[in-house]
Length: 406
Ligand SMILES: Nc1ncnc2c1ncn2[C@@H]1O[C@H](COP(=O)(O)OP(=O)(O)OP(=O)(O)O)[C@@H](O)[C@H]1O
Ligand SMILES: [Mg+2]
Image 1 (cartoon, rainbow, N blue to C red):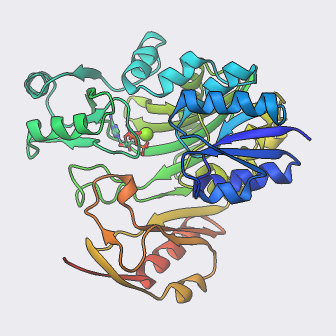
Image 2 (image 1 turned 120 degrees about the horizontal axis):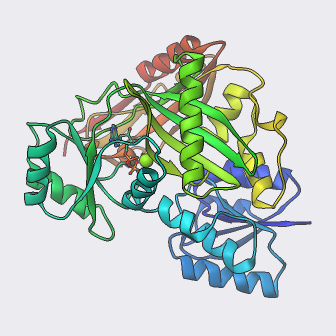
């Protein structure tokens, strides 16, 4: 029985742990939280913070030496490429190079690499002070995006316009960077797309392709908050192909020979451009639920195979169908949750695949400043995109999250 090490036992990793067990693997989960839901589901649990590369590598080495040999390492949804690549490098397991993981963990270094490799990207620049930001705004004009170089979940990512105080914005971005580093880039207009590709040594496949929803750009301005996405895309087949090829080329430019490349893409008037590529399975139930539901492709299973050094077939990675799948989030008024009504009624709506809340009665709904402040979500399916979308809208309208200002 082969052993797969999964870094992070968070709730979004549960489908990955289940899938690995179905594949007949012995699953070890490492997480800094002994109460992580994946700790119970795994065959073995090891206490090590997902962000602590050394602690995880040391724990994996010890396990490998003393308990049983580890055959592969992966993360599901958790954005910890350095930890995964560190374990792979130390134990001699398949994985992306450490340099690739470093690029995936640093938005500035990643963009520099893309620029060197002629991958289409927005104009970008490092910023070390609000004075420098003012200077850059003077040169480039609005709209721009300011962001921490090394954060996630859209923390500290702001769309800059005349209405935004630049000093405040600079400090927001800086506070959200563990290393205090900030960058600014041109805001790309156009449809935003989530792609998810599996790059194999001589061919790349992109079964994940979802139109992202930004209907609340003004409501939450200057924060850029995504309200879900839907499949299949409304873009033409040729536009989709162009976006896919661009995302795959970006993954290659980062040095991914075999592995996942999760793209944040924009189809601009000049063609597809890359916002960023993550070198890991996506979160937000995209790789684990939405892609398989929409296309029949078990991307997670294929990524697990790659982590074990196997080559999935092209057939496994080619969509078998295109069903409608949508995800939408709940954005109640900030305040303390007093009750959540009509959840069971909403669950009865046909096509409701997952409906869940991150918060419950007694919890505080904070103002929405990043993706971690979203309150809950629903994933629906339908015969086509609008079928799925209508059902998601019905669920959002049915559930009532009551809050009281405190
Ligand atoms: N230059 C840009 N032009 C247009 N939109 C942008 C730009 N930069 C970021 N965004 C939007 O903001 C979102 C968050 O930015 P980014 O991916 O850089 O931060 P993040 O912290 O990694 O967020 P997440 O973890 O949600 O991907 C992007 O997915 C995109 O929708
Ligand atoms: Mg991102």
